[in-house]
Length: 324
Image 1 (cartoon, rainbow, N blue to C red):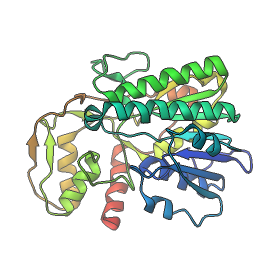
Image 2: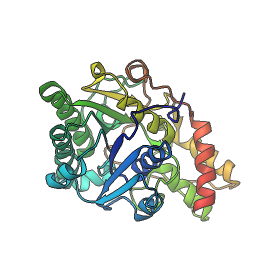
Image 3: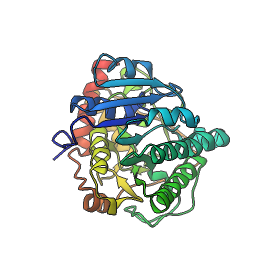
Image 4: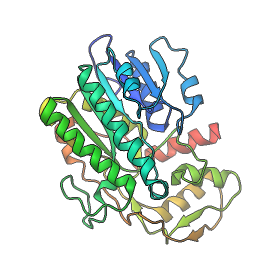
């Protein structure tokens, strides 16, 4: 079962921070489709106005332009809220290496503000975005919660610190916190533009535009690419999870493993393009291989992802063809 049949108390209100971003806007859309209320909080620094405009006419959707670095804003946004889905953060390992102080303020202090506001306003569940980057240089595959290595970037550090705060907030204050360790999420509305764009939308756009994509490294790095609908399911199931599961972080992925070079040629085939890629240097802070063990999320959250890579990538390609 996916997420569309999940049931919450009538009139439930969800606050989605970063709700104008890729993952956040998909969460907002899914929850309003299900008939529940959504408050979207975003400062539009990386989120998009068009993702807000898409939903703004829905009676059960409200947009607040505001910054999670401001505690008062977080307090106001949490008023009357049952569930917080905290997606507001700046992504990108390379950018975090260039801007470590900003990442600390935004991803750590901002998340802490949200936890504190959720605690003070009596929110039932606090679900937040973490990342597979917390595994750092730990070599073992698949990645299992509790077996983490040395961190490789400020971005990864911010996510690890968020997890530690969440654990403390559960232990000290009884706030039910659930960390979503996302593994390379992709799908509709993921931004293909800019120096820090994710690889799948970037490659699709470049191939459609007649450009030659550059693969960082030899293309033999592997990732557990995870379709957006699996991530929506995980967030909503965390909101329904028992308190016994709180204070934990969970791998959110499909549990597969795709090599970048194979993805590149697969996209070429799907788009009817024959073009050899360029190869560039490895990116600083990147891990070589990533693959998730999702048994903990299955057991404690009843997470059961519907979309494998093939199913997800077909839907993503279709969306980009229509929308780019």
